[in-house]
Length: 428
Image 1: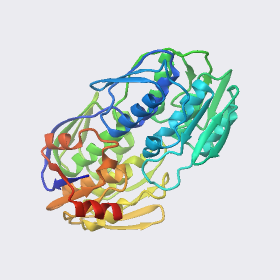
Image 2 (image 1 turned 135 degrees about the vertical axis):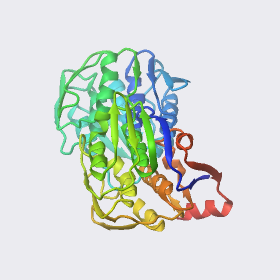
Image 3 (image 1 turned 45 degrees about the vertical axis):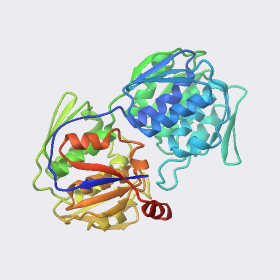
Image 4 (image 1 turned 60 degrees about the horizontal axis):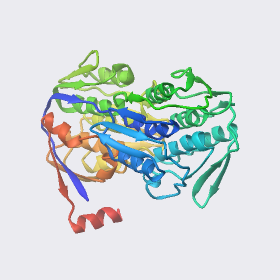
């Protein structure tokens, strides 16, 4: 096990390239098995979630090869083999295997998904969609079993806007008989990315990016090549880091429209931002002002950026309030920020941040992916050296984190944990 060491106080300056979107990749890889021939996915981020999903595909018979950031998936020998546990339980996005295998084979057996512990995130809307298409869904020994004689298009209204359920129902419906209509569908860019891949395969999908998606089932899908969109959450994380410690940071390979809500809030804080095509420049921000933020479904402020911006708000003048309407357990980073000297109080779904705190290096632990990003940003601002454990969470979503920060002038490095530290981490 390793820990990330961050010496704070170093200004950030230079250029950073944004990787492909994690939240697209984890759906696109399972989607590839719906094809009858080779699928190539370009601009894949080099993160552990991608490797885990590639291994899952190999477990069910796919041939997977890598060429830099490109993955070639040959699904010709894929079988509906049960995946009740093991790697499935290490990441939540493994639930996309349900929709993909149900769509291809009319049956699947997948262990209940794992991933970051962010409180209750039920998959009832996924199951509602599968059942509407004609599948019988049972929970047997901690695994979800899906069985259908045939899948028939249906009208499905999602009780809550859910990215995962929208994508999973799309995967199951593209080869169903007749038309499927998903109402109250999510609108995230990653959903459009998945629909673009499926359309390139031969699927018939309309309305993606709106709250009503219509899918006319087809009998067969063919292989194709697809390039993933830039990761808006990784881009947002480095935008926040640049606002915290940047002199002049150029962020390359970014779609500004995908982070418009963050741009608006950073400008409200006093951050200087220029956008041009697929690039963004963030200048020095000597004085930041407090703001209030409420996370919402896209195009609102992303819940995945709530934790990173909470760290930045410890620098702002005045009191800020951050309310997370998506996940009610997404404030586990607050206790760790307090260890560093932050003045934050959590009340229900909201955090009150009293700014102008003087952060100090400390020993902290990342409880989930975006909490880890928040701790890295706090560490860049802190005086002294911060030790961050729980790197397995950070490695799930950020490609070459240390290298990118080093290129900007930060002082970061990894060290192996001692036996005593490993025991402390496991017991905490």
